[in-house]
Length: 125
Image 1 (cartoon, helix red, strand yellow):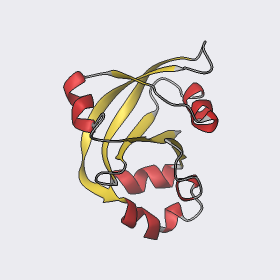
Image 2 (image 1 turned 45 degrees about the vertical axis):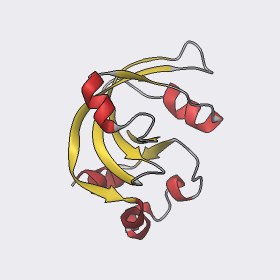
Image 3 (image 1 turned 45 degrees about the horizontal axis):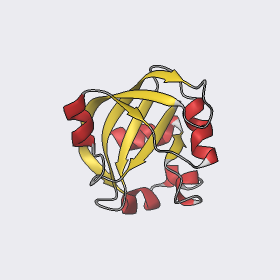
Image 4 (image 1 turned 180 degrees about the vertical axis):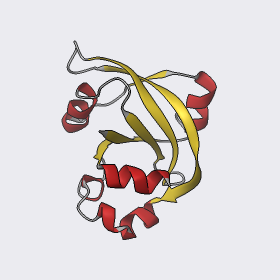
């Protein structure tokens, strides 16, 4: 499984993740997003999406480890993989048929969104 992680680039950008080399993805309070975080597995693929400023998928990351012993604050460590060759904007995603039924457009404020294989492939090619 793959996930799209939303972040505000003026608070923590993909460039920040690349600079840091690894980080704990936290600050999540939405119960559904927390459920997705707790269910993540080591090695799963992530797409980093800049919200508010840019509104585009910008880079790829990977889950390093998951400690879900505290269900209200799971500790998901991630590391960058690479910047996307071409950013995929929110407008492009809206018109892509693979996102037709995506939770991304039903729950706009959800900061952790599961992706189908087809959605991940579309974002990364």
